[in-house]
Each structure stands twice: as C-alpha cells, then as structure tokens.
Length: 164
Image (tube, rainbow, N blue to C red; front, side, top):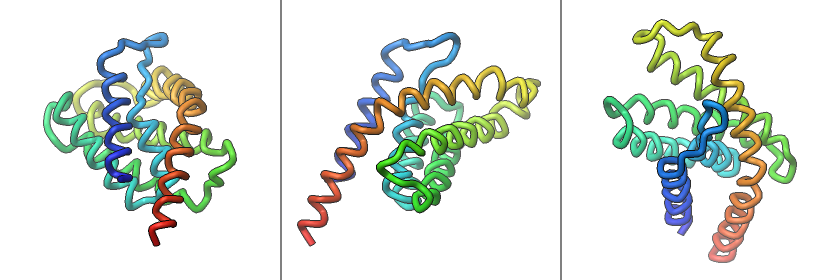
C-alpha cells in the first residue's frame, strides 16, 4: 500500500514537473527531489535510498545521457537525508533547513558528476547563481507539500500499526 501511494505521488509530481512549464526566473522547481527529501526524512535511510534509486532511474531513462548518474545522485541524497531522520522532529518546521542541505548536496553532486569535467563552469558561480535560488524555491514549495506528505505518512503508519 505504501509503495503504491509513493509511486502515485512520484508520478504525479514527475508529470507536473515535466509537462507544466513552471519557471521562476531561470529556476525550475524540482518536485521529485522535494518529495525524495521529505519522504527520506519521514521514513529513514533504507526507504529513502530505494525511492532515490527509483526516482533517479526514471529521470535517467527520460532525460539522462546514460543510466546511472542521476540514479546515484538521488540514491545518495535519499540515504543522507534518511540518516538525518533521528535529528528531525516531524512536527516542527526544521525540515526547511534540512531541505536546503539536501538541495545543496544534490547540486554539488550533480555539478561534480555532470558538469565539472564537461563544462568549464566555476563551482562557486554554479552554487551562487543556480543552487541558492533553487534552495529558496524548493524550500518554499516544501512548506506547501510537507503537510500533505506528513498526513499521508501518518495515516499509513497508523494502518500498519493496526495490522500488527
């Protein structure tokens, strides 16, 4: 049941991200990354790694030059954010700080694995021009998305607890 609901959420976010051209400035919101970070913070590193692997695979299939780079980046972000689950109070809004950390981690890994050897973009220029704007945009979006994800997760955990 949980995997079906997460799959539906992922494909819904993926469809919104790919079909509706939402650009604020030159930054496009990364809804799938937002979902991965929030889900990893709520469920832990094991499920964050699996969801990251699957999200990265789908993104590689649709957009990647080859299969593996996005898969590895999303999987790593899911694992790291899931490891921070113990430091995260579910009911607080501290997830915004961790959301920013996850987006910075994602951007630095994306730069290292995708752009550093191909383009001659300076990493500081990349972080200041692109990453910081993406952190602000996705953090604001997570304020709207988190209550929905939190409610779904609580309902699923309650149903799982009743089964046991």
